[in-house]
Image (cartoon, rainbow, N blue to C red; front, side, top):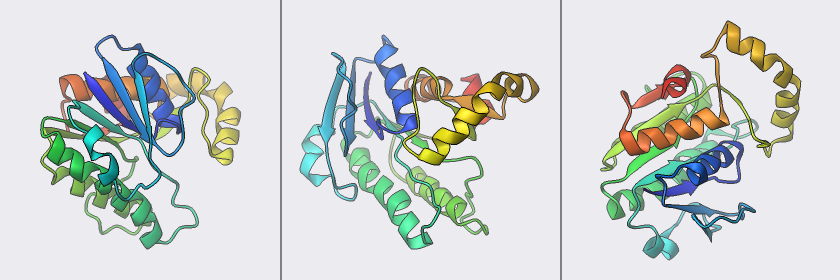
Length: 219
């Protein structure tokens, strides 16, 4: 399986990249992003691309792929709906639209978020935009689209968030994770579980299109 990965330097993307490189059924990983991953591996090929709104310059590199794990995303804090939509909806479709044309048999796995609003009419801005993005992806002619809505995510294997606030929160919560796992096992997932779940869905399918934390942990 040949996997295309967006957002490999983020916390979730790092987890997906790790699982891709460990999975014997993944033959090649193509990482597209603005920053290098800092990793070297026989399976890994990287394309540095700065324009998240236009991939026409590298379209020739984006065919013959079996799956896409799209892990790009930012917090909505401090952003207007217009600005957040440009980063979230517009940037996602800028990549997904040509991919659907070039790879009609591709499975597209998208990192959304717990609470995404598929009605697009709720009061929470980020949830509306995420729901809008999900709905737009479902209209594209991929073989399959899987929408991952994780809640809290525990980073493992030395993976860290690039957001300082999140790094502080994870450091404070880390001693509590074993207790939380016993009390509410489906209240959070890990970077490892999420990466494996995305690969499982891409390769073998999933029982549903929208995958909440409990579904992610069961894959």
